[in-house]
Image 1: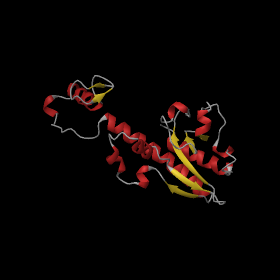
Image 2: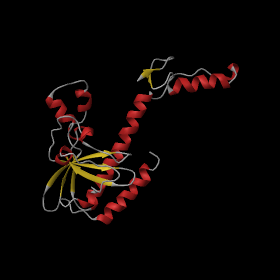
Image 3: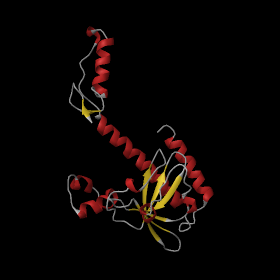
Length: 202
């Protein structure tokens, strides 16, 4: 990614969004009408990061509420839930332990028969997830990857990804088809309708 030629912020183009708007305003507004402005708001990079975080949290909440609605026990397990503040502590740290903490699945879920599963939730607007999307040396071999898209909620295991299977718009690996979970398909369809509403314009 390049830099804005005016302020030096990271930008895909010659000007970042803020500087582009300021230049556009300068050309369209007479100088005597312009008021001095101070830099404010997030950079493009920070804004995109926050936008992606919000989409991920919506997807996580959708899956959490789906399992709760079917009377499963759901425990938030990801690093930001298990060890609050650890994100800042691990920033720039490179070690096996740090990597394993960063890759902790989002949830531990338990059914009525007391079977326990790791769940990692991903939002994918293009409804695609394959082995290349999994971090290298992903340590949770028994995790289930639940992919929320604009239309479907699909699921695949880490071993299935390693076998070359994947999630795409044409695959039929729906969450409701997982025999291990035995979830009510009509309820899942209702939650897919939520996904359509939440992610329609994403």
